[in-house]
View: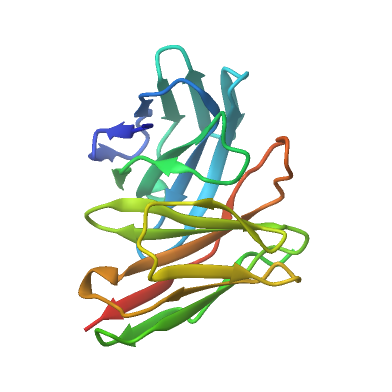
Length: 114
Length: 116
């Protein structure tokens, strides 16, 4: 059974710092991995999607990497800003899943202090 | 393009009642998935519909059901509500077709259900 873990559960950093969020999964048979952001009481916003054949994806100040063999992904946020404060979730889609089912981690709650 | 919309945004019900939530996907998207989010369990997959057929189902009791219409709009129903059903219910749509492709999932704002 696929399990997704995110460490740390919460993180507080000063503005301007570069930071890394971690995501690990137990079954390497994944189709893709997606990083989301969730603001309090709101829905999820997709940040980056990495296909299983890819090693990384970049969007602006965000860079996500994937090491399928070790069951790990990282989300790197450069020059953090207070507006980055949110909960970050990673989710995997199983290789054998023809549909849209995602398995989520519990998230990392990020707070960026001015 | 308009995003995923969910109605209603907030609901308060009492134990034993039933509730129906609605989700309208992004235009052209045929896959709609439903998730339950609670502080204790996090985000858990309920079910997915594609072209009016349930394609995937999570580990929830039969009180949770759903359907999809020909215009891809989807509804989920929870019967005989329990206190533990209080949660944020999120739906997501994607442009996924059988066989793969990039399938970024786009989430709606959610429906906050409170069961008293």
